[in-house]
Length: 321
Length: 203
Image (cartoon, rainbow over the protein chains, first blue to last red):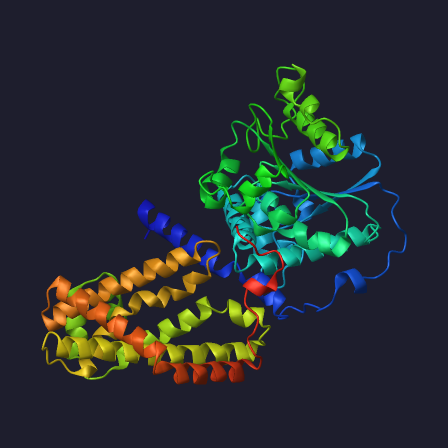
């Protein structure tokens, strides 16, 4: 018996709802110590840095919701990171899988690794549905970060993962070396959620760059130094953050988002006729702007300008054309 | 299978389900629905257990205790409605039948665990309450031959009565259940999601 389209749709909706209800368990179980969480103050107990890095700036890139691990970054994301490394040789550019409180790749999970490996394989062989399942799983983790009940737990977990990643790469806590978190798509929410906790651990200034980030009016925004939200005019995905989270509506001037915006902690950066992903996306190296640069080149220039504290508008299409 | 049929029909708000359930001799269906709804509710609220780092075995025991407390709350609610329908509308339905009707009308609460859903949890909570209220109204109308508004007054006053009892005579019971929850969880259950973070201001 072949189920009709309506039944299939119903099955999909039920699966989506179930995966939503199950989404917080990884973070909650981790917090409760069910998966071996060590209760410790990372800032004090993490192993001392063997070889302190000479990098003047540390950057952590948080991938979009399409990933299953930090090693499965899309081709365009790899190009972005390569270009950033070329442009800023003094900076240490790191990658992190943000949709797990323990920075554990889906393909490295205890019980479901086989499932995510299969999903990734199918996705790479261009089966759109497999990509949908991965996106769905990660979207719910973004919602866990944005949720007032689970956010404090999830965000502390990702902040600890970030701190440990930094430490592994020679970052010395309390050294004051600045950090930049680049959150692409759902990674934007993870970045603003984790930043206040990360700041507590490392005691250094943190800048966040949201690249088409889907973000809520996170209570932690009050503790953030600077947030640059890069948005393309054709990027409808990042607009979801505005639509879904009432705290971002102008109707609520005292929300965390609107207060941070009012106080100048959030800067909205218009990237021009850019889309969220794929062709015409922030990382498209083929599509050209009126000034002759590719969309990717503009994105790289903008991120570099922010990190090097130069004029952002000079990196943008309208600032040069 | 009979149970599943009845639950399915009550979820679809069909009055035949309630007429059928009062014909059954035992309270099994009603109490089973409410107990499972209670388990689902306890799971939906389990963030408190996780936040307090309750261990897996105690976690399961806490869910069962939560379900039993939920069941007792349901019995009080059914009793309140039964008092109201008897005193105000002069109906002479047995308390047992009231338990069957209200119990089956708790079927939507079987989905209480959806309260866990991040960000949309409170939407589910409200939706399930309204769904169950609708089921209670259908059940009361069918079994007691009340009009819509009479059924509504019955459940609304029943609810008010329950709240009054909760806030007065129910206080010692609450202290007792709190103590029971702590005993079973093995911690004081002092942590709430709110005080886990220093960064929880307005959102």
